[in-house]
Image 1 (cartoon, rainbow, N blue to C red):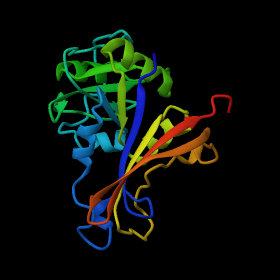
Image 2 (image 1 turned 90 degrees about the vertical axis):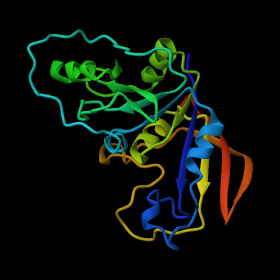
Image 3 (image 1 turned 60 degrees about the vertical axis):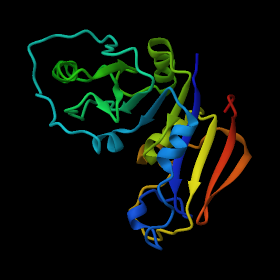
Image 4 (image 1 turned 180 degrees about the vertical axis):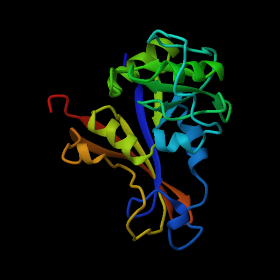
Length: 233
């Protein structure tokens, strides 16, 4: 069963997501965590680059004498909320097993070496497999639902991860915290982005309906859109 998927992001008027670059400075306030809590997901998901910002450890050893099966390994099943990180090739050494109290669940491919799996297990970091060499996002959602009972998932970046979910036709709702600021220069990530390989792929969006607009004060708006995907595209 596919969870209901909500993408939540905060951006400037030109769609950029690094507030330190926005002008005027200090625009927008700190609304993200508040809205995140209000949306009430069973789990939230981020990409490898964003996930690396939370990691405290070093990469795990490249070799291991231990042979481990390519089976899902769940350290905790009793959490209220899980932090899911897409790390297809096992690049992140965690040095922690949770983010803000939410147990980390890493989404891997079967190409990850045994030594990385041993490292994750040694730190109590759960992991699931969702593909041979590339992550299948639809399969990821199915596994999260079956293994952990996730019925509502918050997709929270970065732009490449958001874009991958969007192009896969998996996002049901988009909540945008829009600040009265502009980045205006090259080099900052966008709300939705892609790798070079996916640059010509378009999202199967059939319709977007503005469900609500909420004034958060100081010129900041929360825009809530319902998304209809064209499953035949």
